[in-house]
Length: 129
Image (cartoon, rainbow, N blue to C red; front, side):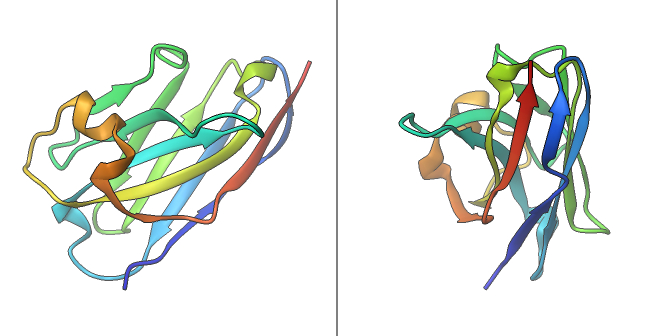
């Protein structure tokens, strides 16, 4: 069974940067797309970014131009580089792995939580203003 372990969260001032990492166990990492979601208390978990098997990247409008997702299939790791952080980015961030999927994905597929079969435990990101 796959395990996803996030790291890199913390407290940062507005305008600062953080880099989240998500390391996966198990096999066939390259057969899956990956995504980052975030959640704040009392709100639904929301899509932040996704990367398909081809390396195609997708972003929510709220983070486009500030966040960057990348993956390394050999290291079985996905990263989320977050720049120009604002207090609105404060949340618990989760990485997730889709079921085995086609080489190319759509943002509709990556943004849907039902597309994912495994989730990490989450890492807290707090941006002070």
